[in-house]
Length: 351
Image 1: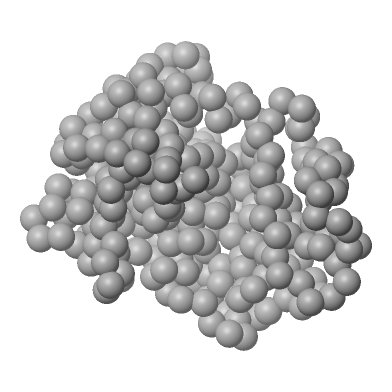
Image 2: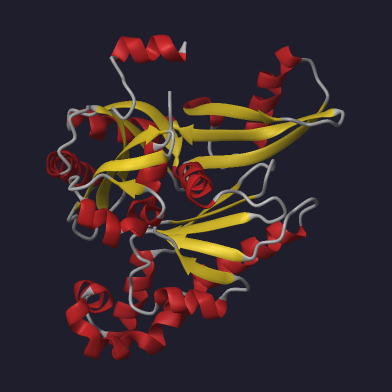
């Protein structure tokens, strides 16, 4: 079926791109794969420029324009994209059942999803993946997302003349990209934290274990908001100080408050790492790879490294992924690669 689907769409290797539709920006990555691995052939990022407390319909109109602009500056010729979803309308859960007939697994997963998902399953898309198990049990991972969240992303893409051919979960795309770039150690778990504008996505997985995915609703937007309240500076000014190379002198004004503004995120990540470590058959986590649009904020990675119980490493997937010479977005991929990790993971998906 996969090959027939590709023929139907006229897809060829490298013709699909990853499109990360975030709440504050649109990110795009297109990859080609050969015997040596992946090569990036295009990259782009455009801020959506949404206003605070703006209506969703207005934000979506701006997002559509940003998608169109991002495809244009990245010079993408294809119209086929893999998109992702995250947040409270998405659930990734582990399941384990006693050994049951294959024809009963789908129903059992649906019943499990009704119990563990924080939203109604009847108005959602549900899928699952089994994990090989030598014991007398059936285990795997279920993924559910509300129809509303999926249809919203699909509509924005289509309104920008982009055809979504697959909808992924941001956390799983991140993990896929990390596997490709870092590999998976035999006796250690991989952990990656993507800190975006609205959500921070934490993913943990060991070899032949079901990934643990958590979306934390404390990310760049809330951190900036807390700093704004502390200093009486506007959110725009806070962002300028945190991200502009020309605001080094003013950065000391925020240094003391940044750690306090990150406390909720630090506590949530620490608690999640400890929870994972307490699970049966869990593997040790030595390093947390961090990426996302907020990780370039002055002092942020250093605060995480000094506050979390593991080593924290800033991760740019394009340190490992080759770049096609003079490709559109080449400088962006080199310097802003951590913010494009989800888009890269989406681009690695195949249909």
